[in-house]
Amino acid sequence: LVLRGLEPHIRRTLALADRHKDEERSVQQQLDADIARYREELANAGGEDPLTADEAHSGGVGPLQMSSVQSEWAQDISHRMRKLAAGSGLTGEPEVLHQGYLLKRSTNMIGDWKRRYFVLDSAGLLQYYRSGSKGGAQSTVDLHTATVKVDAEDPTLRLCFRVVSPQKVYTLQAENEQDRAYWMGAIQGVIASLLNNLSSVHSSPAPDRTQSGMNADELEFNVKRLAATPARQGPSGHRRSLSAGDVALIRSLERSEGLTGSHPLDSENDVDAHLQDLREAEGNFACADCGSRLPDWASLNLGVLLCIECSGIHRRLGVHISKVRSTTLDVKVWEPSVVDLFQETGNDFANSLWEGGLQEAELKEASDIWNTSLENAPNVAVSRRKESLLSPQPSPLSNLRKPGARDPAARKESYIVAKYADRAFLSKRLSAMSPEEVQGSLWRACREGNVRAAMTAVVAGADINAVCSDHGAQQAIQAMENSARACAQAVSGGSSPADLSPAATQDRLDCCGITALHLAVQGKTPAVLELLTYGGARLEARDPHGRTPLHYTILGRWDPGAKLLLKKGADVSAADRLKSNTMEMAMGRGRIEDEELFVMLADNTR
Image (cartoon, helix red, strand yellow):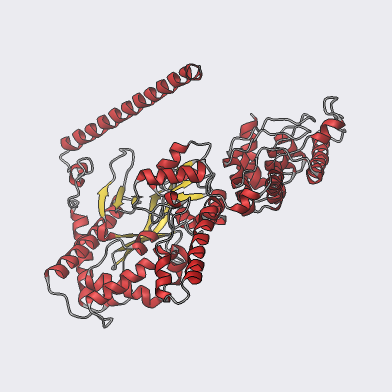
């Protein structure tokens, strides 16, 4: 019966998907026709086809066929690079080879263009800055593994070219054709010089010792040790703690030994800014369920980072248990408030809740074995006691110990299902809490804006949509009632708003209350709002006077919270029992200083 009821929706969805496919096919056909017409016009004019030269549509990775201007500029750059390599320039600060402003296309969903200042240096790095070459570089591309392509994917784009590397792709636009030729020639010249240097290093015998006083094997060992440190103990903090000598050591190996591979330091520098922020929290450098390095998927409502394999298992659990998103593909999800939620918690904290019982069992098991060895064999050597710890006796949780990154998918799935769906590993402290204690801790955490306490309550089983009617809730309701009446009076020009309708008797006001989402307005912490909404909080929940959490954010003058709820889909047109909607409440409290909030309210009120 349920499937029969869903059948019309399924058919509409399939029809919509087919329509989108047809539209995409027609757009692709139009694009192919435009490119063919462009090539035909170019052939009739006797010009060279940049698409064929660049092998953009054949997928080739051959060298870029340069014009005479680009070739001359590339040769000049290569000559300067050779002079630097022959002299002492390469051992000091890199020399700037070319710099200037270019338009850069953003990698977000909007794809807007921003003017940035680019700098190309003799170390093979292409960097850009927000304004001029002062301050820190916003992003860097290592040209050792990059190539240049003429961007003809969109025939409407003029004066564009792409810098393509394994880590990122820059789509850039020059001010004129000559500027584009100079930039493409300069980058191609640097790439050619870098490849020639690598070829000479591998074809000639390397010196026994480098300028640092170590041979190549010792130098490579030290760099690998430095590169492994951030991945083991947390990328952000250790990356910032590297000394100048450590950095010089890495650069020395790269330049003198030709080791320019993507070790962990380089790969982490290329990670998107929000992903770097996500990994700053404790434990977020590894998957929460199997320990795989550098996870790039996440469960929004659970607040944990996951590897791609565990994320697939989470998807099979259902969205009522885990809402999975990519940290790199779903760019619109990662609002600052969501990033704050993950930074406030982290995998280590979440696992202390979800795996607390398992951790307690492992500690008790080890302690019991140690005590037994002391009682039964007091004269046994310490080494034998330690050896006994390595082979503990079976426990009820032995068959569901936490899996590792290389364990089979079936074992990971059984563990994840037991952890989240069956809630089998909760700590004794959480399991021993009464429903009243759990619910009260959630409401208290929302009032105080305490993200960790709120997550603890949710994991312990608190009902996010339960109604709070304690003394504090009644005070909040009355405060919002006073504010709403003042706003309604201001909007109406000074006349008093209507009295309570007969339906809202005093008995009803005494027995009704507000939800955790209403209470979160008192704490004014966006991360708490994110935790509640991703956990299934009802945006349309109303207090005894008919006011939603959005009304509370407006009356409480918490504009960031109001914008967050509007983005989540809160109803702007919802009116309370005084017949005031959200826009009228905002106007009644005075001038709306937040322009973004005003636009959002106005657009949704129409």
